[in-house]
Image 1 (tube, rainbow, N blue to C red):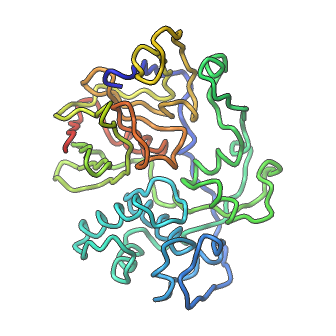
Image 2: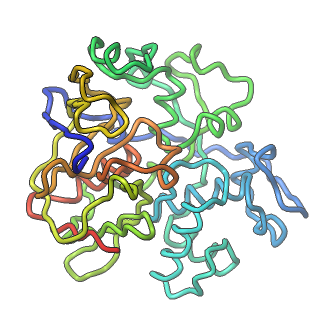
Image 3: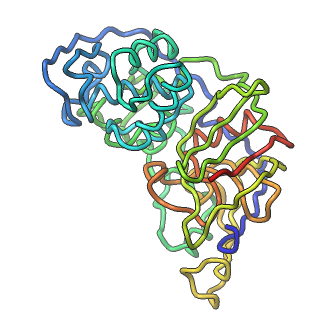
Amino acid sequence: MNKRSTIAALALAFAFTACSSRVSVPAVEVEPVESTRPLTIDDISAAAVNADPTAATLRSTSGPVIVRAQVLLDRAQFSVGVIDGNAGRNTELALVWFQKTHNLPATSTLDSATYTRLMQVAGAAPPVMRFVVDEETLQGPFIVLPRNVYEQARLRCLCYASLTEKLAERFHATLEVMRKLNPGIGFAALKPGDTIWVPAVEVLPSANPMRVARIQVAKKGSYVHAYDRSGRLVYHFPSTLGSRYDPSPTGNFKVTGVAWDPVFRYDPTLFSDVADNKPGAKLPPGPNSPVGRVWIALSRDHIGIHGTPTPETIGFASSHGCVRLTNWDATKLARAASRGTRVDFTS
């Protein structure tokens, strides 16, 4: 991107539905879990995530309380990227902006006042809920994804590698978190009518997303903000941006279009780490495409906002100049933006 990559974002005939379907989640009670110590990743379970935190567990830097906070932040429109149970940079960034927006001290930590306000904003639904598996959930295809770009180009789609990956993306979580919420469950053996525990990220209405008037790409902080017409911050997303060698641009641009399930055109002459004499390739669409499920084209050649097949790298890697979001965050932004939406790249 910029001089390192080029994208041909072509809208295909099929519509993207993975993040738009609703969760059928009956209310299910879990046994309360109490602790007088900070918790860890090993403590993650559905019961532990749904337990109200104590003064001690609020001090956790990983584990079920962090999963709980990450789900609530997601529902409050302050995305942490992928829900992984770790209070890392993306979670701290989401907390800071949530705190600033709600006139709380910007501590970047889950203090009592922040937690109370977060519960009010994110709604009363439990952070994890039971999800009833249906035929659509189980539908593939699931593929063995080759690492070689030319082998990928021979595939019909860059589809999910497994049902576990499909579920993890739908519920914005890592594979590890999904497995810890469902110990002993073989996801590949699931059948219609089975139930599993999932992060409850789909409980708020999303059929009519808030429309945005301006998008800010903050290069220094590696995040994307979307504002409504009044200038109110309505979405916060962590992002991956360009590096020193392939920097993202600075300046003001506009959204020129949105392509769902885009095709990716691989041109080695535009990648600094690939020999120019290598042949080009056209990679099929799918969630494991280099640009994910959606491409938001901007009024700057070869620069766009798009998804990624590796959500865990958001905020920690670098791009070739474009703006990477998780597939679900890119989807949300694409639905909220429109042709002509202003996009400002700031330092």
